[in-house]
Image (cartoon, rainbow, N blue to C red):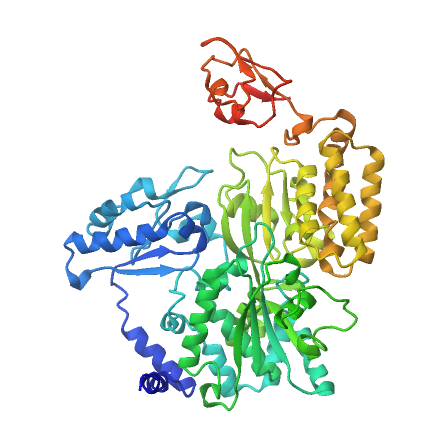
Length: 633
């Protein structure tokens, strides 16, 4: 009986056509009062880590106890990542559009009493621009948001990701209904070709060309054909795809269904990093809701087209983001890469034609079909159309998730959207493209952020991680870190990775310990060329990029490690010493009390000294000194 009632409910929800979808959208919109007060709380992963659940619970409790009449009781909406991760938890008061940041449960009573009831602004919770010192009330006036062009992220942070009603009100599944009602599969492929969309997973291969090649392979080999979402985002500092899946799962699902319709696929897979439990939860909910509404499964929107998808959890290895390793993982085998003698559009999953694109690429598809390839082609630059989502992290004031048109200079992203480096100094460099990307110096800050310009600078777009560095970061140590990461994540199947990366890391270890030589620099360049030429997959062939770009742009820093046996950034422990400035030291004893080895001595209110033979260079003394009396030499 229970199963029958569930089936009946699903039949009642099931949409049969574009008209049905439009009628549902109008009905849902009628239920919304634009003047109704609403409190929106970011529940992205960053805000969750900062305690937004406690903030939401405090709001619920506070409203219940506030005495506000039920007729004007504010609604509470929890959303995906609103992007401003370094400022969370984030709370917005609508319809006024008041934006509060770094909210704690202790602030809620005041927010309800002053802002919700009386419309007053609480100054201390407003965002303060680090460059102008201005307090800003509304989200759209904050430079971090104002200078973005949120296309893929248009709904992320605005809708409840667990509600298909919210997605439909925001325009979800309109493109799918339009395509099934008015377009042939070939028309969908043509729009993607016209758009100029390039894959956002790193390589930047034109999506339309990939789809066209798959159709040609299908003509030769027949069906089945598979469509796959690569959600195995593993780059250090990257969280773009995770935020999209968490905050707007329906956009990814709709794009995948459209791709399946264009290619005639009946089965798809979403390969999602196992460390993204919230993304998996929201995607599963989205798929269940889409099936109930007739948007996924058999006979979608009564069109005769059937397609379904399932989620495969990532195997926990960085290398599984590589296409052939990802396919073998989905097939239930160890995720090891294979030589790419034949492209995956010809032989992918189970040897069948397969189209693999990353999360952000699929999230662009519905937007293109809804508004047209010509519209999309006008955004960005001719060779890199559309927008790109980045995770902006590191030594920057405004850490978070940003989306900008292709071709925007690095300086605009880092200095204006990102608010620059804390303290106001110029940034030293920015690492783009993750561990396989390159390090671009401040002197190239006007480099356009697009596929070709970044490649010409020796870096790459990659999936979109952007790590900002200042003068306290050592490029030799950075290269060591990324090489160690890739060495550990390599499958070890081919000799260039298995031996080459290890040897390169050992050479860099020598630099940081004061054992490096000029010959070692030459050896790094030689090894890099050999690995790029001989590695089995993209992990190995791109692994030397951080080393090559840091040598190219910061060779003097390598030479300082070699010739002067010093680390200019004060990072490499074997090459630095801590010293107390007697003119600045007040003898407060804070450093001596916190030193784990007891190597600091001196009388109270008298300058202290450090016994360099006992010092382990942990840096606790420098961190604890309120008078900046401890120097690195």
